[in-house]
Image (tube, rainbow, N blue to C red; front, side):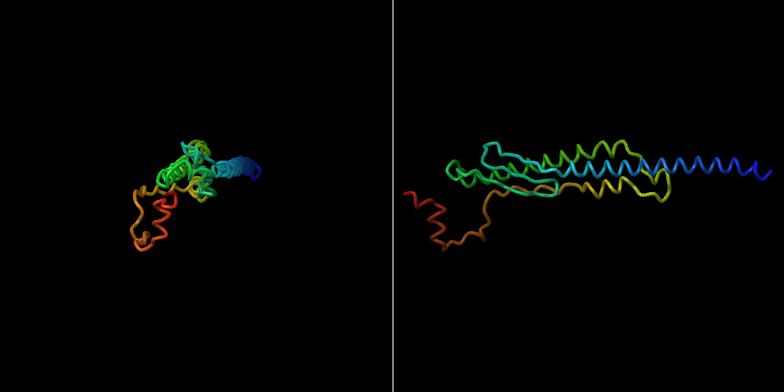
Length: 167
């Protein structure tokens, strides 16, 4: 009689063990997919300003390079060049956030969270939140230079700022 009761128990334990093993295998596969998606989300992105004067490169983590065309100072004013830099950086921020969203969206939408199935199991949604923090807010555009940076007694600065050397 003892063998009759232990056979169903062994079968139940084996089925439960197989189910847990399958869940852990799924977790490992989804974790690997998440890390791959994280690599895609942090891939280097490069953009140009509309006028072709500024190229910015970076990832969702930050800007890695800003390149200004060699003839930029001949083709434009400092104010317009500043707008071109801002435009390129804004577009870089938008594209890196979009790349991150596209890489991680399929994972977060289709994935059941393991703590829902097994109490105490690690949470994939928490892992996704760690890998993809929300992007920082964009700064307000600056329209004028702060007066504290302009020295009124700087004659040499006025000479170059007003392009007096061209006369």
